Length: 319
Image (cartoon, rainbow, N blue to C red):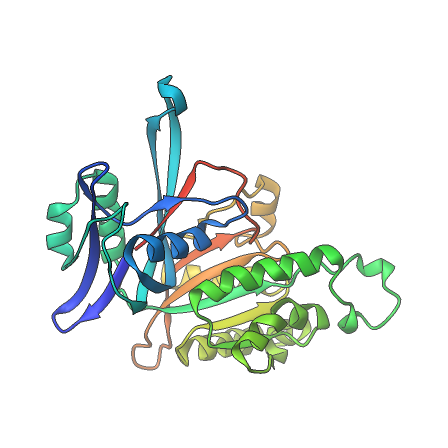
């Protein structure tokens, strides 16, 4: 969902599509080799002319569309993200001939489809301008028992390097402004290229390594919250022994239901209330600190893989 801050409050972009003669939230189809997040950013730019920074995941809407050739219908899903305007301007095009910036109530009144209305309401359920924390587990680094050197220096495998490229491609869409990592080579390598893109160094955080965190979990969680409380959009890379506890504790403390966008086995769910596969991403949204309580978790969405979806019917909408 495409939005911007205005003197009167948050405004939502609603577009008119001449092909369907409807008022809609901007959306589009996945290109081959594209993730839903990347499709949301690309389609928003193509349809509206605006460059955006993604925020929290909102919801997935499923519906039926006519099948190619007109023989029955097929299912289609659309993934919606919050998307804040960064730059650009609207120019009418073949897909969209008019764009209106409206307050939420005005946008709801004009939208044609109920799925768009429901997505708008989901967006409005929380403040628009939340702090985003991108929490990534390091990518694959081969088997520990096959590495004869210092485990801290175990590097990413070839598969891990591909995962790291996926992490870079996806997390960049959310506008990270600093990069932090547990002091493990595999953790640092997973996010190194994002830091290079930003022209900065990876900040190493001992308290977010497994031995640092579990030596004093209260202190480790406090450090994580301090990073979130500094604002901006931090990208943090940690380990599988840390991430599930951090996410689970915050969700339980702040009454947030975890949104598992990716399939998780029953066995994995029992072992880890908050899963954390290698190369996975937790998209965490925080409300500002209230008094001395620190920032409060508002939403948490899990993406097991940063590689493209195989389904050509999936679409993505920026909000």
